[in-house]
Each structure stands twice: as C-alpha cells, then as structure tokens.
Image 1: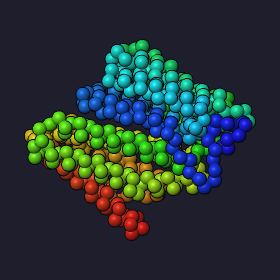
Image 2: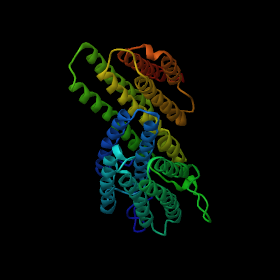
Image 3: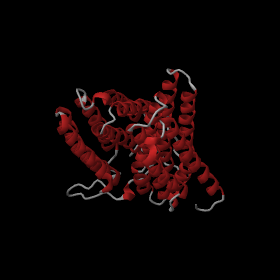
Image 4: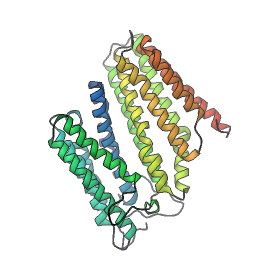
Length: 392
C-alpha cells in the first residue's frame, strides 16, 4: 500500500524494508500496561470458577481491542496527524476500558461496553473512510470488518445494560462474534468473504507489535513481584520466592525472545501469505502466551505472600497453569512457522501436568521453585538444540 494521493493515510511499503513501530503506537501501549495489571489483580481477588470465567472474558476483550488496533496501524501510518489523533482517542478509550475492569460485572459494565464498542467500531469506520475507492479490495475489507464489529457492539452495549448472568451471556455472544469473524474471513451477505490475499500487511511490524505486548505482560509481572516484595518482611523464604519469580519471568522471556520472536518475524516478512500467518500466529496463538504470563504473575504474588504451608487450590492452579498456558502458546506459535513441535516445550507441558497431581503436598515456595526450574530447563534445552541447527 503505497502512500499516494489516493491513500495518503496508509503506510508506505518499501520492499525489503521493515516498517518501524512508531512512538504514537508505543504511547497507546502504555494504557495496556495498566489493563494487564487490572486483569491480574481482578483474577487474584476473584479466584473462583465464575470469577475466572469473567476475568477470561475481560482478557479476551482487552487482547482483541489491542490486536485489532495493531492491524489498523499496520495499514495506516501513525506518523500522519489524523491517524495519530485516532490513536490518542483510542488511548483515552483504553483508559476508560482499563479503569472499568474491576467492576465490569458490577456497576461499570456499561462504561466498559461503551468504551470497548466505541474503540472497535470507531477505528474500523475510520479505516473505511480513510480507504479511497481506488482501493476497492481494501475498502471492501474495511466494510466487512465494520459490519461484524457493529453487530458485536449491539451485544456489548446490551450486556452493559443487563445484570448478572444475562450480561455474561450477552458479552459471551459478542466475543464469539468477534473471534469467529477472522476465521470466516469477515463473510457478509451478498458480498461474501474476503480473501486472505486482501489482508496486505507488513509482517515485521506485526511481529514487533506482538512482541511488544509480550514485553508489557512480562513487565507487569515484574511490577507485581517488585511491589509485593517491597511491602514484605524480608525473610529467607520471601527472598527465595522473589528470586524464583524473577528467574521464572526471565525464563519466559528467554523462551519467547531468544529464538522464537526473531524467527517468527523473519518468516512472516518473507511469507507469500503474511495475512494468513498473522491471523494464526499473532492474532490467535499469542493469547495463551499472554494469558500464561498474567496467571503466572498471580501465582508469584500468592507465593510471595504465603511461601510456607501446603499449596491451596488457587496457588496450584496459577503456579502450574500459568507456565502451562505459556508453553502451549509458544509451542503452537513456533510450530506455525517452523513446522515442527519443540520437544523441550512438549516435555515441559507433560511435566507441569504431572506436577499438578501432587502439588497440593508441596509448599507454595517449593512449587514455585519447581515450576521455575522446569521453565529454565525448557529454555536451556531449546537454546542448545537449535544452536546445533537440528530439530529437537
């Protein structure tokens, strides 16, 4: 999409040149540091089956509004003033969204729904208007996306007015609509579905944007660990839990960034169908990766506050479930461009499932140390195996 008189707001695409992430995009991302923090704290305070379901829905909404914005700014150029102003408006909307998270299923549900619907529909309408008739495929794609998001917005806002289980159901329908839409290529009556070839993207930019969100999630984990540890009396157990939490976060960084992130960026940059890979690897498969980091941050806080005694159910679920989600996400993400499943990740997944069976008999500290050790082994194993340029 070259920037010309017929598409002045679009990013210029220069062959063999990577479109950098702009400062306006990074400014927009700041709100989602807060959003991720709100989600983890919400899970910590509502660790029940219903609470976990509600937090999952909120996470899916936050991820979806962020990743859709990344798609929009992959097409449009944030260095252009109208696009930059759009990002600033979305930042304000994201702030309202984030501050509504703790009471989204109470008295701030309508605020959450209005902020979410306004962000999703507003930016796609902007894309529609910014796409000139001389780009019929891109314009039709914008119309399709707007149609699906407008439909889901009806359920979001209706859920904001509803109460209790009705809100849960209506928002669930809205999420199904939005998550289904890319899979069916935004099919609409009369005009049919879009072609994946219509989703012209700059692959390196998309990879960098998603890697940035991983950094946001990891940074939130560090913030939670540091803030919790600062308020505690520093005992040997607490210090050990603090070190375990930090090393576990470092292992997650290593597993994702040491080999996977750069390889994924290279693969999508040279792919003949970058839109298809972006939809699978960066839109869908990054969700369990981010969710795993958030759940692990919850476990780290629980272990720091209560390192001794037997592990209760929420400690077991978060301490093993967080790394498990992360490894499932990374093994599928890497499989999408490598074509084989990492043995190190698969073994890590199996061992974590095994630990969950007897984790109740372990203290939270020992459970944390054990799960951290598994993540370190996975990171080292993958690094050594790929250094020899042979699949594990």
